[in-house]
Amino acid sequence: MIDIRPFDSLGKAKFGWLNANHHFSFGHYMDASRMNWGRLRVWNDDEIAPGTGFDPHPHRDMEIITYVRQGAITHKDSMGNEGRTAAGDVQVMSAGNGVVHAEYNREAETTTLFQIWIMPDRRGVKPSWGAKQFPKEKREASFEVLASGRPQDEGNGALPINVDGAVMAATLRKGQTLVQPLAEGRAAYIVPARGAVTVNGIAAAARDGIAIRDERDIAITAIEDAELVMVEVAAD
Picture 1 (tube, one colour):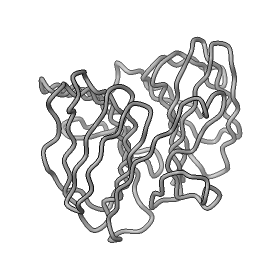
Picture 2: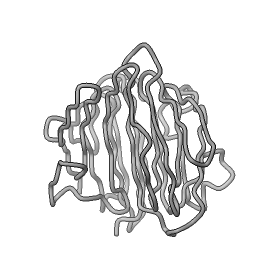
Picture 3: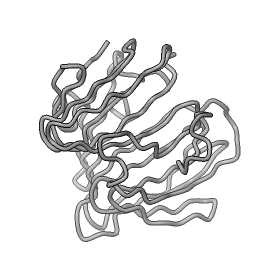
């Protein structure tokens, strides 16, 4: 099963300083058919104006992964963590039993990012935060694991998350193909950050959502140079 969710069909929210596009029900956007995809609960495609951002607010019992596409985001939280995550890099916050954080665009340009929420396997754990640089040249024509709680990824340098799942990224030059296996009982959700692709022969444009399950292999071919972000989680 492959379900293409065109960018124009996503939930929209415009606040002047923030243009948000919701792949799943979030905030004022509600679609009963788009509540989650397996353990994946939120995928927001955000554009944040310079000098603005999200004031301090709480979270709990959610794995929150931020993939910066352009610009940078500056984080500060109630655990004492503070850091700047730039384009192509990733930050992870395990909200656990509760954390307050703020996210600001301190740059002179618009920051664009994907913010991904995955439901954790264990609730009420100690919260944590981390960030890491991931050079894009290491992910050409193959998925690099950026964040993971899967046993097979232990020790591979990915940021840890509290769920049996993974966030991955890949780049493809026009005409290149990569094949990614998908185990039984698993679900995948892919968004091209840029570039058009086909997935098992089905076309998808930049920033479309591609929801996948019950496919043994995922064959992705770049129609044009492309950058892909993928989440792989339990399908239930």
